[in-house]
Image (cartoon, rainbow, N blue to C red; front, side, top):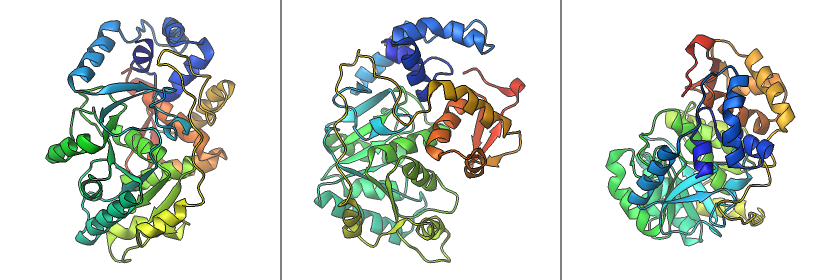
Length: 369
């Protein structure tokens, strides 16, 4: 209950959650300290998430037939626990066990071509036959084709909204089938309608759970390339299907291949790329009420975070700047900067825009929730 209240409190994102846990030793202590922390940040009359709201979320989850898994528990995905900003809590619905499953993410365009959807189906079937779980985002186009083809062997759909809110609505039947042999996963509370800001957060879970990300079709500026960028930051293999230079839906894939992504022609190419990859070490097993040893390994030290936040904000203004350019200007690894950008976004201090752009939110325009 304390974990749920902490992560649902205003301005507390994943990075902030683990930082508070590391500084105060427990979620209960962090909740008690939050009003003082907020006052120090200039926010008056701060109140953490009330108990009744957390209880309501638990009741909605039970009603939806979902269960809550905490970071550090035996069922928590081992690879997801290794990323810089893992969700402290995830809702899951379905029958596929999360532990011990090797996953490959298949992502691509919503307005996929006939050739692209056929390629996605072939990859999903081939990977499933090899014992690999297909993970995707339940979106139209490539995601839908991959999930359908992997129903028999198991597939995982990562949701941008709650596990009980199917988006797009046309995939309600597919989601019902996935529950029978696979899983629906979300870090959002049940009942949450997906909004645009939720999708980049969803994408880092898709790549975080997988050993590799295969981009089947993607435009030069697309959510699939955000997933690929997340995968690179997380140390995952990135693979792409080449396409015709005149097809805008292939431009993102061709760019990835140009920049070093592995070219894929079939499921055999994906499997070959995975062979040298070591099996992840089992995650530390704890009870749901245990306190994690501290923030994930790749999170910057607590003392460094305020300096990094200040450096980020100093380089931003109301005019959008490319996130990649910002990272280059800071001369820091992307894995250190990206989670703090997310943290600042959740705090209402910066805004992410389409095309991988970020901008400063003026103080008068900041939202407190």
